[in-house]
Length: 393
Ligand code: PLP
Image (cartoon, rainbow, N blue to C red; front, side, top):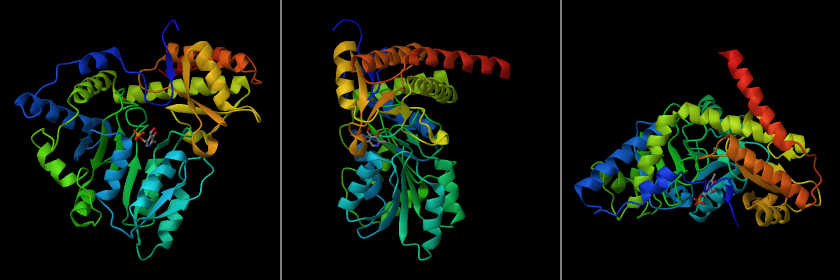
């Protein structure tokens, strides 16, 4: 097919040319001084994105590995943890914990909201014996487009006076949505390379608090590859306990430079701006955004509900075949019922407008009932946001 492919799934996100070029470097000796300098630079540099001064470890793995690392380094078989059913990814993280013999109390959710700080506070307040060892929340639920209010959940844990560890999955929010590991006293932040960091899949992260590092000295779950103690010790000189993903680390160095050049706050504002325009398009089409709480609308992706009796996957297939655009599928409970538009990482007004054109054309081609004018509404949203900003200056 001619022309460029429009990759608008909510990660992996498109990789900027600068990063592709950085990755295309000759491999070097991972025990050389040159590697040690690279290792130190990216391990230190990553801290700014997590907003932490505490250790960040980088695994050559997908995000699922970093989920497992968070669990196996802090918990013991038979421990109880509290999680919120925000969607497919919270369900998968729960499954991993369960496989390691952890009892998961799963606060039920409708897959249209983020984690409820009030429900978390109420459950923790009841737990006078402090049987709950950790609260585990997915920040941006990639399957639904709802972003949980992590700062409010921190306040809820404090209001209940509960000592549980706080673990947060930022796999699809890091470097796209405001996030503060230290200020929000998160104990383990889990993340991945293939979304806001604009890298290929293959790197995952744990940002680790002192409290979590202390827990890893006494907890009982076995681990080897994921062990923090050895990683943190060897990372101090920029090296890894095994062969690192050298070329992805070159890419990470470039990604961190790009984020610093744009400024993290500007990156967050750009994501919110794109998301608002995308929602304006969905509204104009007469379709429904899956997330029902405007305070939790995701800056990273918008999940769109299909009209009843229309299959989202059939629509996505037609849009791909006719217009060369990849949209995210519905996952788990919402499979076939929603499609997801990614607007993260290397994305700007025109790339989003191109994608929205693909969606609008695809809806027509698939015979999905909708009103035209979504793209025009997104353009009007950008213009309106610009006017509001001018007035504010
Ligand atoms: N958590 C969230 C929020 C995700 O979006 C994903 C993947 O999309 C994962 C976890 C799993 O990460 P991975 O597929 O890199 O193992």
